Every structure is written in structure tokens, then in C-alpha cells.
Length: 232
Ligand SMILES: Nc1ncnc2c1ncn2[C@@H]1O[C@H](COP(=O)(O)OP(=O)(O)OP(=O)(O)O)[C@@H](O)[C@H]1O
Ligand SMILES: [Mg+2]
Image 1 (spheres, rainbow, N blue to C red):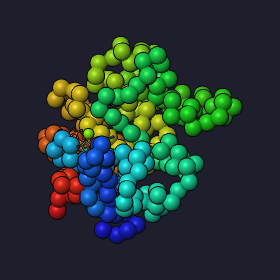
Image 2: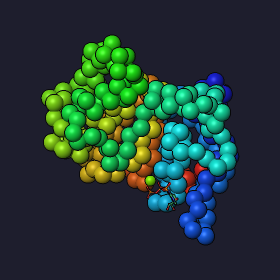
Image 3: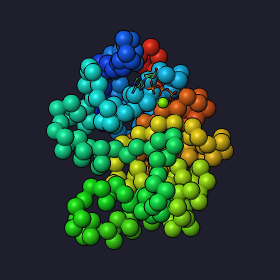
């Protein structure tokens, strides 16, 4: 694997949680490399550390040991400001339970990452463009007729598609998804995978966590997390 193609790389990742007197070692020196344009599925038993790993890769959590580098830059050496930029612009996150705001419309939920990355004045300057992008994404994801709905007025699959649109809003280099189909029936789940496949074909790099082998099989590469490491 040429280093040029590698967009995300982790080396020797270690992470443990302390619960009272006991220490749970979740990641034990994990190495991982993802190339630009890849669609990788990470599978592993419940409690094996999949979510922990994904949060670290997206800079939502910090490892105790080891490094994560994104496009050659070590996340551990970035300032708070740079990390915020990374979280907001470089990665998009999709979660099992959508994490949409029920008070906001579909369109507002999708626009949120752009709103959050601007000052109030900056937002006034770009909101028309942002709205256009949000609508385009929603149409692309088959939600053109739902933009004024509130999340609670949508089905699970529709909610997840809104969450995907939100994750894509700032054109992230990397899409991270934690059990994106975990809360959906298999037909709806497969529909979400159709969306990921389509995005990947258009060049989107995706790292998805799942415990479902059949879902994982739709990715380009499957890696298994066991005993705190990638099983080779
Ligand atoms: N904040 C925390 N404090 C203490 N222990 C934690 C914390 N977060 C996770 N753990 C523990 O770390 C281990 C790995 O958790 P993680 O959520 O990464 O697993 P997972 O592979 O995503 O599991 P699942 O498939 O059930 O989502 C679990 O044993 C869990 O109990
Ligand atoms: Mg998990």
C-alpha cells in the first residue's frame, strides 16, 4: 500500500477504561490503514471496541497510546481549533440512533453542520448556498418530499438518510458510520447500504462499523476487531 493513497492511519492504538478498581483494556496496540476511496467494514463482537475505535478515528475521543493520522497529519499534535475543523469539515459521522434534533425540520437538521461552522454573519452570507446544498442532498437521498417534516414524522430509514445527508453536508473526505443499520429492519438496512454503495462509487471513503456479517459483505473490505486488535 503506497503511503500516498492512505487517508487514515492508526498505529499502536491503545485505549482502556477504568471502572472503579478495574481497568478494561479495549484497544491493545491496534494498527489500521484506510486508502482514499475505500469502503471498509469493521466487524467484531459486542463490546470488542468498535465504537471506541470509530470515535477515536473521528477525533471524538482520544487514545491513551498510539497515533491516528489523517492525510499524513497526526491528530494528537493538532490544536483544539484544528481538531474542530477536522471534526466539522473532514469527517462526517452517522450513528445507529440518528441523533437528529426533533425541534428542527429535516432541512434545518441537514444544514446544521454548516451553520455550526460559521459565525452568525458568516451564516447569513452562505445560508442560501447551504440550503441549496442541503436540498440537493435530500433529493439525492430520496427525501425531496420530506424537507419540511420533523424527524419524528419520518420512518427509521428516512431518519437515517437525513443523518447521512447531514454527515455529507460539508463534503467530508471520510464518512464514519457506527451501526448505521443497527436500528432498522433488513430491507430498510439494505436501502441504507445502497446509499453507501452509491456514495462510494462516486469516490466517498467510508468506514462503517457493524456486527452484521451480511451488511459487512457489501463493503469492499472487511476487517475484524478481536482482542483489541485487527485480526490478520
Ligand atoms: N465510557 C466508558 N466507560 C467505561 N467502559 C466503557 C466506556 N465506553 C465503553 N466501555 C467499555 O469498553 C468496551 C468496548 O465498548 P464499545 O462500545 O467500543 O464496544 P462495541 O464493539 O462498539 O460494542 P457494540 O457492538 O455493543 O456496540 C465495552 O466493554 C464497554 O463496556
Ligand atoms: Mg458500538
